[in-house]
Image (cartoon, rainbow, N blue to C red; front, side):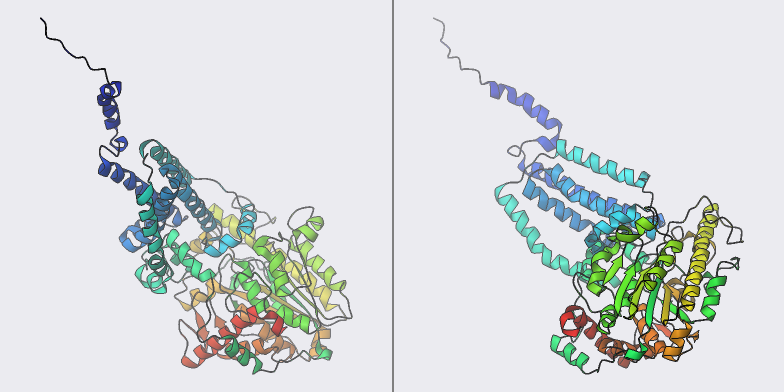
Length: 630
């Protein structure tokens, strides 16, 4: 009898297992964690971290803007720069991977903000030779308004970064499928949380930034923009957080600052000496005949030079180059050696004038959101401030008012004032703002007669100088009108910074020395001009001639110079402190330069260092105790 056999039911899942394993085995990364758990998670975590590192590398590729490519390759000669730029992006990607559980989503959630910030830095370097810092995040609305003035185009470098980001997300979507759970997720999150404190010390350390990541081979370390980009983007951006959050000066306490300020007796402007004051900051205006340019048509500066001969004038040594207008503007209005991002009422000379009974007003023909002026100028104490939206759009047919319209309207504002009340006006022009056309003459005729330069440089320089000539003519017309006024008026005029000229290409082609490690380069890089003019009524009232050559000063000391010329004494307690420092250190530059007793230096003597610290203490207190002081 045949032997009976027992048939087992077919296990279809088991039968299909070899085929499924073969399919999974085609891609090692999809091999189940139960089969090869170590390989599976090594694969996942490797590509998650690698994607973060790749995003960091793309950021470095954009970090140099249009500066030489050698700077990008120099990053790899400094492992600390590579690590400090890549590590935050890698850790953020890892953290999001644990929280979200999808590698491709974590990569995009970390990478897209980094890419957008890097692209913003790229365009800011391109248009203004100025890097994107943490403080710029607060004024993102201003930054968006700013982009409307320039033609933004994606070049091959930007498209390459976009393509790599998309490709990385697609790869992670299909090939990195692991989802961390339970203890794995908890352990990684805790590990990342514990790393925040030691890492934050590295990113805020001045020693690490100044010495251990110094990368000066292809840049000028004395130029702040180049020093910033020589360290990449993510790292210097994170380091700038500490700059945006001001710390108390050494030796500061509220009681000590209060005692310091109350040790001075505030001086009022005598009632019979209250002349009207008009301050005008000219956008990107400078006298190029003083900084090495030749072959400029005499007509360009003829009107301005005539006005200087009738004025008390000198060199204004700013903190900025080609951008950052409000640094000079607010330095003059506040007397602050370093300008913060104002978010509340603050001490200022505008408030001092208000306390002396002056009506305070001003105007700027650009958008009210630009540099948040609509809010900040109220924090400074202005009674009224006019902008594109509430005045100048109507005057200029919805365009940005040029100097002919703007300065003519400034005269109308002055003449419409309450004549029984002294008047302070501070206004900022827009006409000189770049970019300047590279393809055609916009002012009708040639202003520069040199040769041997590129076509772009020829047009940029001629268009800038054409604007300068027109500004000088409009300023001269305003002075002529004020000259005829019966009421006393004093005019303070200065340029905010040197112009941006084709990513500095004009300066380079014409061999203009902007090397701040030399005295000539320092003054040519940071220097503009100021003048103080008074009509006959003011000269008689204040018993001054208002002519001559004034000292080199920082914007924070320019109001002291004005008060000296007007014979108004020392002003309030803060201005008196500033005046004492100005006698020996008239230039305090936020890039770390000083001028002490006529010498450019990086450090101060003991006595002047103590004077500076006293001023910084008073400055910090004054910004935060407005109600007590005014």
